[in-house]
Image (cartoon, rainbow, N blue to C red):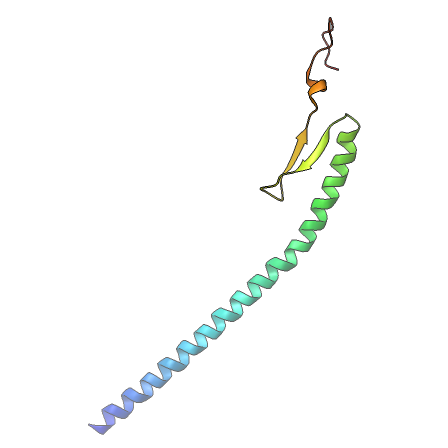
Length: 95
């Protein structure tokens, strides 16, 4: 009867050890994946700024402006002024 009790205690100890080890590996995986995403954000931010500057310069030649979307940091809004959407009196071309 004592042999069964000792075997059960050893089994429970191994289960606790393996559970703790699994939790450590899960936490390490979460840490590494979070670090990888933060490292990927910095080149993305630099590329976004480069694209924004090039587009702002190009669209400025046509009298258009470029704004950032307040809800999505990766979306840009091209603003067309009202005067460029209207026809001049007696003309068939947009100004």
